[in-house]
Length: 71
Image (cartoon, rainbow, N blue to C red; front, side, top):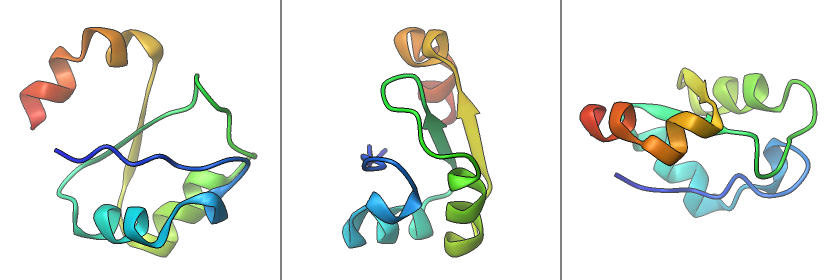
């Protein structure tokens, strides 16, 4: 399991290492409650990385059971 900061504002704020981690991941989850990204950012990031990105809400992060089961 790797946690990657998505940066500020849009998909261009992610680090190159973060991008590499997403490209190599089996599953990708994203949360937007701590920092909302610009509209369409996750769709564009999905296209850039070739990965489906599942958004999760605050409860899923704070409980984490679903995410940990997938890990």
